[in-house]
Length: 186
Image 1 (cartoon, rainbow, N blue to C red):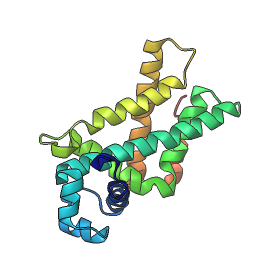
Image 2: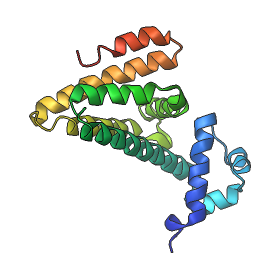
Image 3: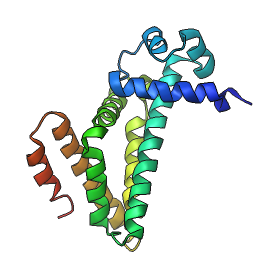
């Protein structure tokens, strides 16, 4: 068994993700992280190679969890007859804007902004990869639309969702943001 397949590594990755949801990853130090997840800096370095690699893996884990959960929700809605693009966009917004998703949304925004900065470090590529994941999800929700039009519509909808979510995270009145979200695909 390789280190990548180690149950302890998977357990520590999940614990690191939970830590990141609560504390973020900017300025993370291995010693407090390790203490919080019942490990040691040495074990984390052994299993992940470096702090930067651990951050990259937490971010990749975040993206995988988000996309898997939303894809399952959208597939469930589609099989229930609510398979329009508008339904998919609304469902994505409902999931992302739910209060229980705020820690994940904050972590995602932290990574997104850091990845487009002048020195992205371990965050490099996150924004592009994340945007691609979400766009592909919304493109798949438009099976009968020509590819170029589906891409454009998905890109516009994601930009609106990102802006609305940032507004919500910034403390805007939830009712005002919800009213704006009702116009997502209008």
